[in-house]
Length: 304
Image (cartoon, rainbow, N blue to C red):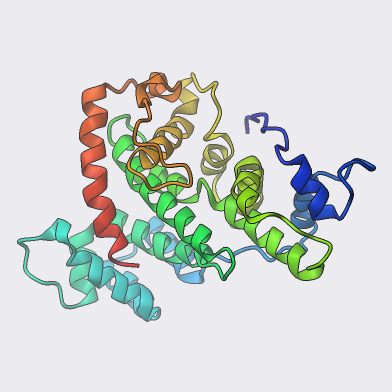
């Protein structure tokens, strides 16, 4: 897997606070180093991918029939209900109402079923508790929007849509690992470990790619997806082998453009970014995708 250099730790003062060391004394251990050590040592509880997501992926990969797939999904009522809800969403307006899971699977198709089950399953990892709950929700909305954009981009460059969707969905999962690590350290030493709330997003910016790799390894995510998670901010994407990472990078920027981001930027000049060279997209095509993205995001959000 290619490696991309990560940004230097930007929060020296906050690191000093987090480690209980005076800013003028001995240089404290960077929080990035401490967090990564804690995660890799197994001291931070990582999100677990629900069994239903793995089972559905396996069944579809083995070309199981729809009845077998339905029986598996029926064992998870929340997933079954979400699939029914999505199959009757606005994007299918004009079609008759779907009333059972078999009909929902037939309407959505196997690819969409797999994507939706993975979305619901992964979504559980993005449900945080106070004081970081709002941040978790923003990261989830951004990840879902990025996944939808990545799927649409993949259709234009001959990359499997499901692969792009999952890469987009997981690209910022490392932020969740960082937040869990910070929460664990705060609980362990509430007086000695202090991270100002306004700096937490910056910590997740600095650390989420390598922490995402850790979680992808724990979930046995395929190497090409892990590579996209690690390299989606790489400014040197230029080779055909970089296409998936470029898709995620562009999708990530599109999500920011439509306001679904920790760093929303409606004035973002998308075509100025290097990943667009890899994908060879026109401004007209991007404008059309942005309109579609808004509509489909609303439909997907309705199931959660």
